Image (tube, rainbow, N blue to C red; front, side, top):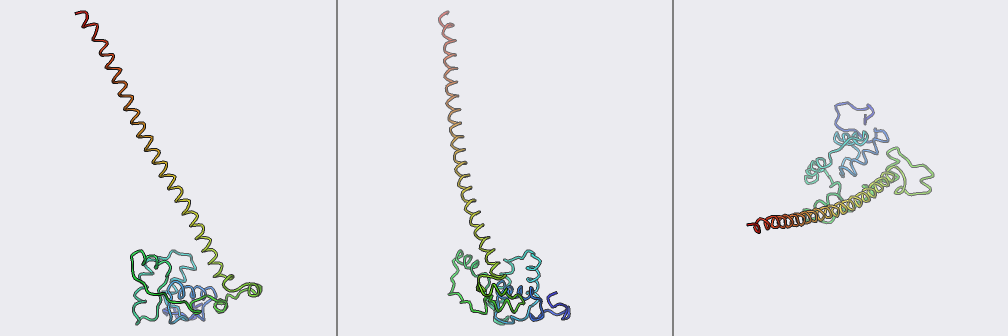
Length: 213
């Protein structure tokens, strides 16, 4: 699929140059964002193609397993130049476990999606877009970033609503416990009054019998 039938089906790699436009863009996302590396950026491995297919078909990706399996490629120079993906996410994890971290690597233009890269992938911007906006504010990648930001804002709103609902639930539970305690105390008081009335009735019923004797 990714080679458009130009290579043997037993081949484990496909050149970026013979891919379709969409597959070129997916390959850029894979080797720059998901599994970043500094070598063979023009060749898609069988692993790259698997991720590209998952992205294209909108299939579930096991991110934790993917990250763990990518670690050995990062620490072993014999496997090529690989970088750590998901920096923002993993930084929070490492901070939580108090793992000492060095200064991060500064991204270069080779790590970014530019208008030139999109054009090389066969997805050029419209002339009107090029005249009125920069590659960082328009195009497929910018749209994905806007959707991501909208999703993050929605998540933050839902998280706040969830927090408020939990606070209301805790308040309601506290009120329920207070009312239960009040009910128990009221029942005890009622029982005590009933006991006193019964004692008074018992005392009143025994007095005539004593006087008659």
